[in-house]
Image (tube, rainbow, N blue to C red; front, side):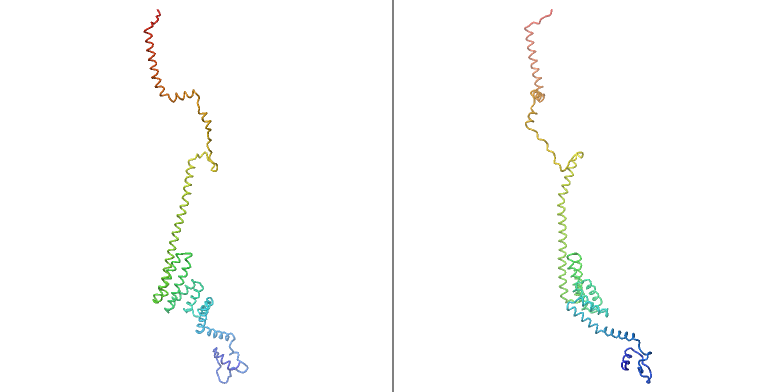
Length: 311
């Protein structure tokens, strides 16, 4: 090691120099052990120098530009890594957070994008950047609500309303922002369509329930009729439901006539029985008339025939 190199290292790391003009530095035969810096201190100092150069504002800006170039090339995951490197060195920087949120939005990670947009809007003092963060935050809610139309219509409406709220805040900061005004109208029409869809679903569900009720009504009536028929049957004589009811035997018409044909005496008795009230009345009259005639005949005989005397 020559003198010039030693002087350069000593100035770089602050190594004290010996006082006195009669001492050459370093002395002949090499550097004195008392003044020779330890190896670890040299390398540690060199590492600090390199880190200081790497973390300089110029290096951070270059890393940010690299992330932006990757974003422009649609390499969004690599861009996120670059923005993370910038945020490690400058945690309070808002621009890399905003750009990182844009990358997550392109990667369809809406939750991560919304968190970063909210941080950027809350931390930034640049109202232009705040308006951009609010605008993109509204886009995130609108996109998430659009996806939820297939699963949860109520949550979809809530996200649409939140997107409108964010775009209104943009108009408060920038009344001339035509994109935000147009997005509000689109979101309102979308909410109306979702509400109409919810109403249609409710009506379809109601019609389906009514239809099922109508289909179940005949079965209920049939069950009631079966219960009534079971209650009318003799419980002591259960019948097999699979057994057909017994048909009553048909009577032979010829046999019926023979059985029903009575004898002559039976006919007379039947006639007398049938005509009993009338016959009795006539019999009384005929008997009275016959007896009257007999009495008259006896009277005439007594007039013309003497009664035999027994004396």
